[in-house]
Image (cartoon, rainbow, N blue to C red; front, side, top):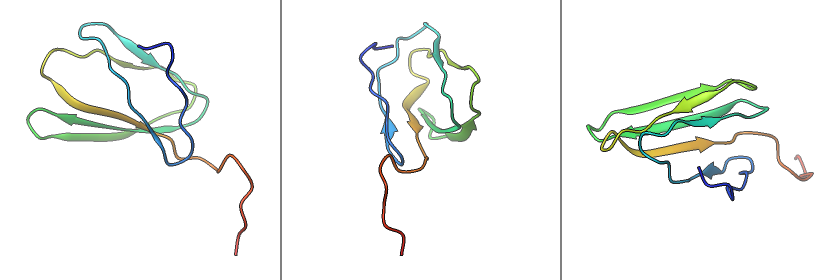
Length: 81
């Protein structure tokens, strides 16, 4: 995993290249959504609970797209009507 990965804000997604055959561990202090698109057209979506390890080990050709989606409160105050 790239050490220069920046965190995403509310409603944004994180995109990064993952190495084949190497486990990548995602850890966060809040729940995150994930979406995985497979080569056979299947889509997996779910929630990674806060303070848990979510381990992804890619094998060549399995996954075409992997996203982590942050849904959280805005970083700055906003006007509520």
